[in-house]
Image (cartoon, rainbow, N blue to C red; front, top):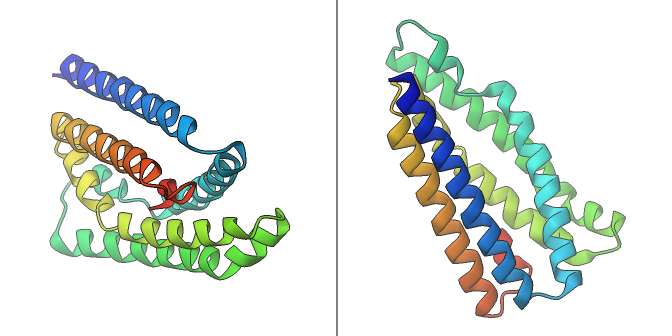
Length: 169
């Protein structure tokens, strides 16, 4: 069972990397270097901010021997509040961050990305519970589907003329 889970997780991870690589290669042909720079800086800022929410991670659900409904609610509440606090700070500070980089468009990118990060927080306890139940196949399917939909949406939006904002949306 452990070997199977390892193969599924590793395979799904490599598939997601391949999907993202193809997406980035396609979108890079549609955007200018300046637009790619805005998207990369904005994505990096959001990755750091959203990584900080791991301190309020639903992974605690995995470590509990018994998980009650109240545990799930508490995990979601803490995670959502931490995410709301961090993304709210990014949303408010986004214009300042944009001016710090001398790129006003970065502020708008960060604001849209902050809202997206807040919405994403809803799914994290569910994925944590799937991991707890050792449903690695389901987690791999969810993560791979997520990567494919994001890649397709990003490429489609870039092709439709959304530019660097295709990454944020």
